[in-house]
Image 1 (cartoon, helix red, strand yellow):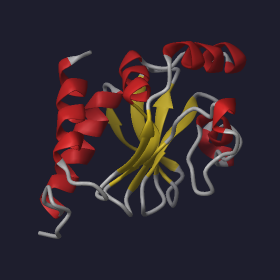
Image 2 (cartoon, rainbow, N blue to C red):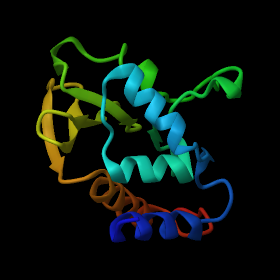
Image 3 (cartoon, rainbow, N blue to C red):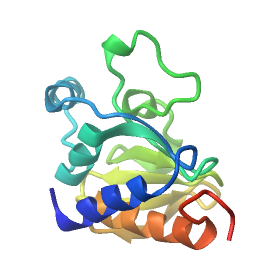
Image 4 (cartoon, one colour):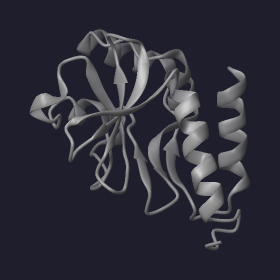
Length: 158
């Protein structure tokens, strides 16, 4: 696991129950099935995250991170965020190279830019990319730092 992702996982685990609501990780074989089915190659650090937490929400109500739907789940969570659904919910001007991996609570989306191999923030009002990170773990680290400024480890507002 890369150093940034290791930091992120450790940081997530510091918070008390109820601050985050993350699903149990999914096996690498299920991730490979998703990639083969869709033709999408997920970044290594995002795959690492999915094996520990198969999506969910950080800083409730906050950022909803997409996971992979597994048929063993029987049915999708009512407000769950799944990569296969995200293939259909893209804005028309997003282009084919963007895959939504997270929804921010104010409407913007975090996407994998498959063409440029980076993570980007898609501004839903401007209809354009407004920020870029070199990896999923870099974005997640920034997101956790923002949350840390707003909420303490017990979930109390600062």
